Image (tube, rainbow, N blue to C red; front, side, top):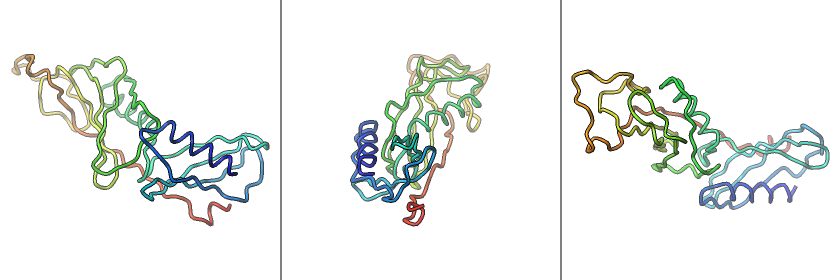
Length: 199
């Protein structure tokens, strides 16, 4: 199990953005069995904990694991999928989002941008990126950054389909990024208790 713990810690740190863990702790009593599930707990240097879900691939100790987003850490791959789904509903087309890394510390007040691959064009302009903010409760909110848009009052959660006819066309000065309403996403999980880990 110490090898599993070390491998998980190394992979998370390698896939994370400036992410260093204090350690990863897994149950000491786990039977080697294909498809058997157990949970480990990762600890950040600051002391926050997060859950690591582990599934055994075979009875030889080969495992597959995943870290869900929590109050301590953000799974950026899952975030990308959620943003893409919300944007598809908002603008009626699929846009590919790239947050670059796989994991990031969930830090209150933090903000970062995810790129829109190929800068998708929608009715309101060109969506070049998505601005993600971590609010005071460690929940995520995001909004599309639209370049070349005519500033109009957006409908909550969507990019306006058609700007008013009386609005003058955008100038170069207006070519600064305009943003739409935010799309909140509350993601949290609670680390496993010691009793649950032994199971």
